[in-house]
Image (cartoon, rainbow, N blue to C red; front, top):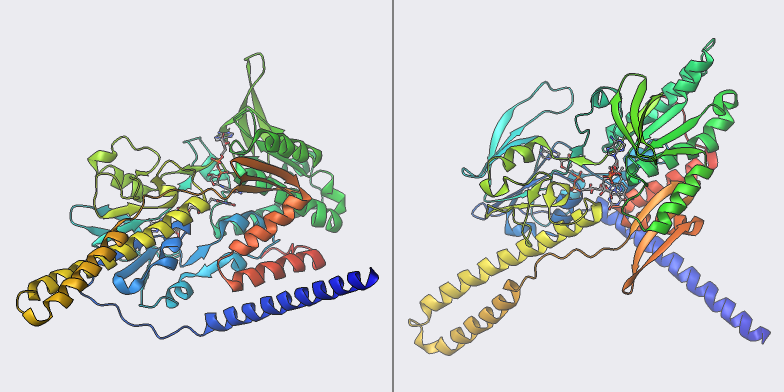
Length: 512
Ligand code: FAD
Ligand code: NAI
């Protein structure tokens, strides 16, 4: 019996060793491949111009899978990198360095077969009648730079969304958002601002309490994940480094609805709320923020008896995470397309993601209204779908052109008429298959969220039902899932190194 166990152990060891070697080999190959892109050829100028707006989940999902040799592809975005948003909350505390979750768009495009043009600019308006986009070069520091027009034959809009503030006074002026890298960097700096100012000589008790009070508005996944990261930062690092003020630290999460994480299952909502309360995160439910000043948040609480009470909450840091609003370029386009006059949340698209009321404009991700939640999963799948659709459209055009050409020669070349007819038949067969593109259907892979203290929650579809789990094992699943989803091997390696670095040396609290 012991011989059998020994042999099983030996085989397990061999398999582990082999898979480790395989992983190392694959990673090395990926790194080498990233650094040695193949020669690119210039696309044929007679082909259609496909303009892609944005370099987020939707647009990059499209670019990754598109055969760029079929079109003249132009990418326009004010952000010259793809951002892996699921790990953005971790950048606010320095657990992960921001460059680890950014992938330069130039690297992505350099690996395409045919060259793709990229302009770092913002689309300010789209003219669907003239089929042109107005773009403006407004890079940081450039006071409203050059403006020009880009004509298109086909246009994909993947500009995402901006932060919703619902016109609440004081929000834009006084809060931090959490959507872009710059937001995470600002939050990281402001946390340390509050900590250092609270530790300043002679600071009043009242001022210390205010500075050390971190308020998060919005109990969606962004707010919950950020509150969790913040709590970890204080427990794991600040407490050790500046113990004299650490007991004054407080996180409050304000949510207008009766619960946090409305899109998760009931048991996970309860688990999240209980875990966060145990972690001393004060969750204020049924509380709607109505006004923000430089140092306070004014919120209206709905009491169980139906009465309302107004609270004034002093804060040191305020992070506003109340969801999405339509970007100006999209709002402008909505006003130009009569079929979109009732669209409020974005560009209404049909099942092939064509913007309703147009024939050559498609929309993906948070700026499109296709009946799905505004998530990275949806945006990425929509982008991949469009790539397949466009690849098929190009093949269809090529096949149809060849059929017309062959049909024209059919009578002239009596000798090989049978062969030509056979080729036409085969092309028509292929064409029917290519043309049979099924409408876009989203496949939900599950929802995950980090809730602090090395715990996460996951709602994963399981056969015909749903598997809900929360805790430390789910946290490991959360980490491995997001690690595997990182854009490149480079990102993956950097994120692992950041996690190890923070574990070994703690987060870096120096203020740049
Ligand atoms: P984005 O990814 O936002 O990209 C928009 C692009 O358009 C950007 O490159 C931007 O620079 C560009 N752009 C903006 N304006 C213009 C313009 N005028 N002209 C040209 N380009 C323009 N979803 C999940 O599924 N799982 C998660 O774990 C998750 N975590 C998240 C964490 C955070 C902190 C946040 C904020 C979101 C998270 N999301 C998550 C949601 C997800 O990030 C979005 O749904 C997703 O980014 C939408 O993709 P998109 O391509 O529509 O837009
Ligand atoms: P959200 O729209 O999911 O949640 C915003 C919350 O703010 C809502 O619950 C709303 O009731 C609340 N709110 C609005 N106004 C308020 C006010 N004045 N006072 C108090 N509360 C107020 O927004 P979020 O979290 O930014 O997410 C945006 C999208 O990105 C969602 O689709 C989400 O699923 C996705 N996302 C997914 C993540 C994940 O899967 N882990 C992480 C982050 C975002």
